[in-house]
Image (cartoon, rainbow, N blue to C red):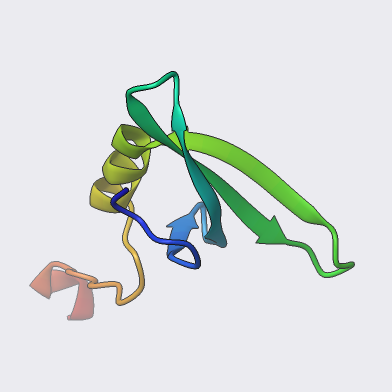
Length: 74
């Protein structure tokens, strides 16, 4: 288990919370991520550890760094 319960993952500008994890198919961790809507209902998705790792590497998780060419401010 690499990502504990209540870890936040940002996917498409929505915060998903690790709601649970379990051993899936006997050899890999499967995580259930939950996103609460404004009406109190939840969207859920299940991802394995490799998929969450790729999302955390490829998608910014918080502090965004913007690099703009120098000539754009001229």
